[in-house]
Image 1 (spheres, rainbow, N blue to C red):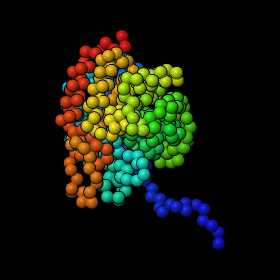
Image 2 (cartoon, rainbow, N blue to C red; image 1 turned 90 degrees about the horizontal axis):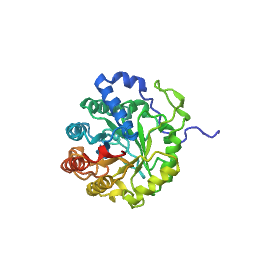
Image 3 (cartoon, helix red, strand yellow; image 1 turned 45 degrees about the horizontal axis):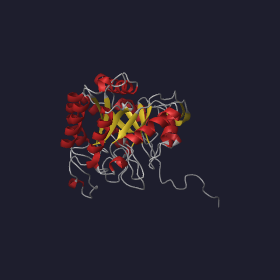
Image 4 (cartoon, rainbow, N blue to C red; image 1 turned 120 degrees about the vertical axis):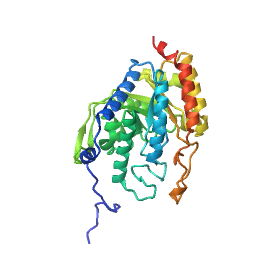
Length: 356
């Protein structure tokens, strides 16, 4: 009897809707296109030092409730309009969650949080949410984790992140070289800069790799290279790297690699010792560095939600607490609002004089 050698450990294969079909089902309005275009160009202008503002990627660790996400977006839009002269706010809308072992993998993979894994419905719900937030007038960001999903969603994204677990991945470097938005690469989970530096050198170059086209066919993707990659300092090995010494080391490392000194500080993860309540302290330290003359920090990332902390996903989903993260803990809305307003007040007269 011959041995079976094909798909030995594959239980099933379900054909998904094509990117083209999803886009036709959920098209983009002129106002949505304007929000995306303005968002991308503003981020590029900040990275090019043509815009003195700091851009701040802020929002829930992950999205699990579309209604709560819209609620948060409306609050954030009002706050963004208030601080627009100094800070450019980009909402975190993270649908895909990398897991160290196993766990809920995000809104697209399991939109109903019940292990039903209705991925096609997740793609519909995710795209609709991105459209709705863009209609509010907020630019959005996400983590590019799955190499297939950008064909479905990337046209709505103003800034993308590559996480610490995937910065070293050739697949994600190649994919990022073709993304339409600027992309931030986090330093490795060990806190080292080398993998992110290598990623930045790779992403700016053209690549050829296997992917899918808009019709859902397997295709050879040829990219132009993405000139708007930058580093994100998130700490590592339980040690922070947002302090002025770590930032200076990063600047020198970027210079040696002939890379632009554009640095984003992630106020969460190892930089806050995984304690969300410490994020404002990290942010204030970064603000003080800028006040004292730092020229390289152009952005920050903050994990924020309507309610503070986090919660486990209960068996009875009616027990979920509204507006509270089901992944990493976040600061609440009151803390968020105060932090952003304080940052604006401290930096409004400083940033216009920067890089002069």
